[in-house]
Image: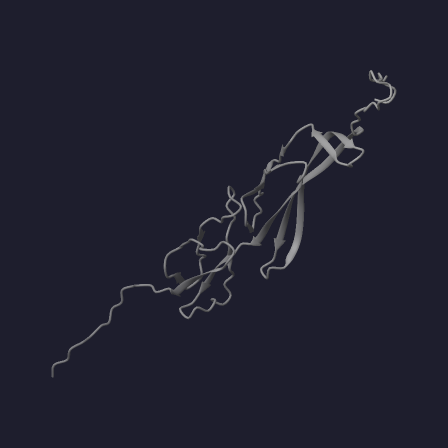
Amino acid sequence: QPGDPVTPPKDPTQDTEVPYDHTMTPGETTVSGKQTVTYVYKDKDGKVVNTKKVEEGTAFTGKTTKDEVTGKITTAWDQPEHKYTAVTTPVEPGYTADQESVGGATVTPDHPNRSYTVVYTPNGSIVPVDSNGDPIPNTPSVPYETDPKDPTKVKDGKAPEVPNWTPKNGDSVTPKDPTQDTEVPYDHTKTTSDTEVDGEQTVT
């Protein structure tokens, strides 16, 4: 340290080597991080119609030491890592999400940010069709209902009542893809009844 006494060697004609270390300057630093979940809403054509974001922040604080010769900075962090909270995807009636939950990663001061995207797509519908596969006129489609416990699924549906038509394969409808329509074939309703025809034999 500057100012420290130096004792000459026994031979006053010889040099005295005084060891020095690099000057180390103390300091503090803070690194901010953020977990961002973006919810993207699309229409039937795949066009984005709305977005929402949910964010969670964190911060790392550290004691630094700077080597004034090399410029290298060493940091002792108050916490070596941080675990974000996992985010459960909200149920949106009429939409199917592509992920049930996201987030929850463990991050460090070197890489403190995480980003996720959840896509909502409109639910498909039950579409009554005739024997040729054509939609039955004046018959509205029935959208699937989103499962209230799982935003990535829809509930089984029921074929709607169509006057003078009967579902060919029963009322229950289980969608293969919750975002696609399901065509349900119908046949003309046929009713049975008794009828009588009077006859007469004539002998001449």
